[in-house]
Image 1 (tube, one colour):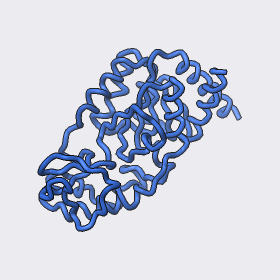
Image 2 (cartoon, helix red, strand yellow; image 1 turned 180 degrees about the vertical axis):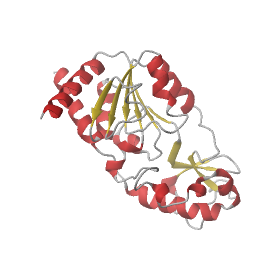
Image 3 (cartoon, rainbow, N blue to C red; image 1 turned 135 degrees about the vertical axis):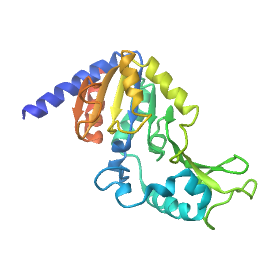
Length: 256
């Protein structure tokens, strides 16, 4: 019972901080989408325990696009494509609508923040929602493709292989997502870190930079992360859907 009371007090304190903050940014990782049925890449039950990640190496993709695309389609479009936003995504969209949240920086490529209604989303690792032609550079919505034959070819020029518009191993962070994310870290007074372990570079540096700039770090995670001891100011231990739903209740009560 003591733990529940302590968590409730932390949620109330977090709501108070967010309500009076000048600028709040959410920084999300794989953990926020797990409750939508999307597994993390690493750890027990993660994708890399079932698949060899070499199919997402950019050089492997260039050399064997058809083989790479077989798994890309299976994982990111057949399986992940069935996922829908959960309550955590919806709360962040609500927070933006009500003026409590300025932007979301996400490491995820699943487009669930946008589907939930978030408008300002910086996709640090890109997105599976669009594909880019390796020949002409034009982009195509994934929803407009049948993925047949494989690999899919550009409907604009008819010459180039389409590549999902997220980063592969061996590629750099896309712009303007990188610059926009660093700007949020520079200017935000509160960082709401949700569902990320802080293991993936260079994304993991963003909350740390925000901390150095004076931001309050509020972390929501099922387990302590690389941020918890040295970077986080308030650790909210639990499922993202449950914690953020409780946070919404507090923010709603404060705004009455």
